[in-house]
Image (cartoon, rainbow, N blue to C red; front, side, top):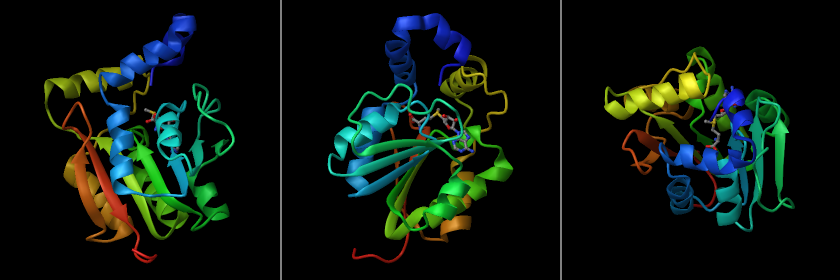
Length: 213
Ligand SMILES: C[S@@+](CC[C@H](N)C(=O)[O-])C[C@H]1O[C@@H](n2cnc3c(N)ncnc32)[C@H](O)[C@@H]1O
């Protein structure tokens, strides 16, 4: 996400600039298509929904689903421009949401969030995801993979300098697998796939046991 000072300077061009900027690193249309391939949710929660860029695609692509976006920032969902009737944005932690709404969702989406979360707090986000999911539900987790490539340097500069998050810290693919296994158990990952345009955009489909399928 672009930092606040740069966003203010962009004025009326902020939305277009944010979309263009994001597209350099992730194709959110491909991300939403991947979610469609992997899940058929009626109740979606996105942890770390930010300003609502992915939210807009998910709400469009799941026209019968209810969507809840949560984040710790104050103006979450600020750029969301889709329908309002089956959508809510709430400034609440994943822990508090899980405490108040256990097993309430069929799908948890966490996209480009974990590298912004301090490493010692990441297991808590995964544990909260587990609690939020109904039996048979899915977690779709996408994060950037740490690997020494030229685009990795560009991603770091984007997050740390343009985005202003000096604490950003990426995991390797194996570290991501370990983190998932610690909360969901070995063998919980059904699928892995890259999201365009970079192979370092790695998504996991994690299933909670139970439900009908
Ligand atoms: C790059 S944005 C991604 C936004 C959205 N998921 C998308 O793909 O359009 C990362 C978001 O993660 C949020 N975030 C960071 N730490 C978090 C935490 N502990 N709990 C929830 N959200 C968090 C940030 O506030 C930010 O809005």
